[in-house]
Length: 209
Image 1 (cartoon, one colour):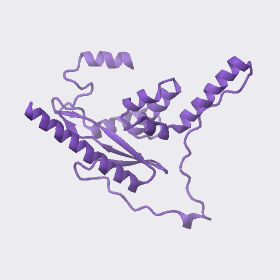
Image 2: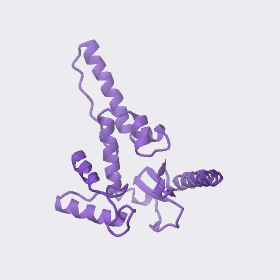
Image 3: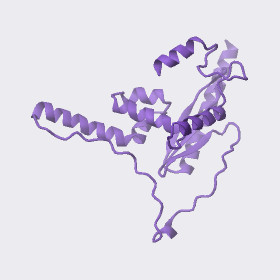
Image 4: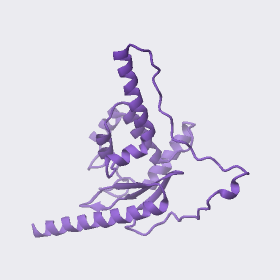
């Protein structure tokens, strides 16, 4: 993949590896990329996944192959390393256990079994017995007002908020995470307020210079 991307970069004009075929200087439209992605999945006889799931796969594989939390956190745009730890705790907890087993094997000379990471618990449909206890969640429209970011439900106990403004012609992205949609909306609103203030300050500083 690295060889393919490196070769592609040589023949690509501008800063984008995947530039828009209709708008010069712009990246490829997300909806067009998503459509192509679904076609590839279908042709490869793979199950339906979101583009965002690729991000989680990368983060999980990076941790399993020794990347430190701080580097990964900066790479995927988390506000802090604590956020990364919370989301991928099922991996980091196992990493600690694996480190303990390696020490036990080397120093203690034991043949302790190496633990494997367990995937996060998937959402289970309520049974008929407790179906009445299920919490009703109203439909949330996908279209949001410009400048308000977006909120995505990652699993049944984790929401991700993202704000991606354009600064000096480039898109920058920051994320927040919470256990409920309401909490995530509050965190996202605070993040947007802070980022807009920082962007305004940078623009003012640039004009004065």
